[in-house]
Image (cartoon, rainbow, N blue to C red):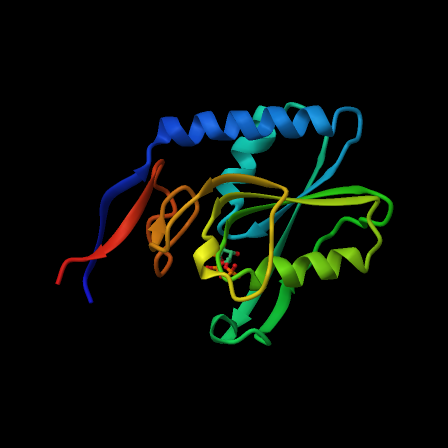
Length: 176
Ligand code: PRP
């Protein structure tokens, strides 16, 4: 199938305004706390980069990479961490930053992993939420946009590794 990404769902300006709004809320709640901000690679890299620069509070930044081989088809999916945090989070305030929550498998798994490490607090911020796709229950603490079940790319999100660089978020469609 040939695909295109020409239909803009969220413009650069709309995304920027939402990131500022989220950052202001988060910065207010984490004021004086020096949280560990954890990005889940690769999709979250651009959102996290913009978010922390809008937050303007001291924080530690770290990343994990989570593989989900075959996991999206079943609730007991095979999810593993292929690159772990380098920062001990015990007793720290942890903010997980993710581009999108879809089935919920990635974040529900990762939240349990972090909880076992006994952080002082743990919250999750997602830019996009696709509630209709959920196969395990998951609610983020901070949500940018709730969207319909459409395949979206740009601003870090990919289709077969394409389109992550787009400044806006677009819907992928078939050209066939
Ligand atoms: C995407 C996205 C989330 C996950 C969400 O990652 O970045 O990590 O899927 O889906 P879920 O709620 O169904 O688990 P992907 O596996 O495409 O990797 P990437 O971030 O490297 O693009």
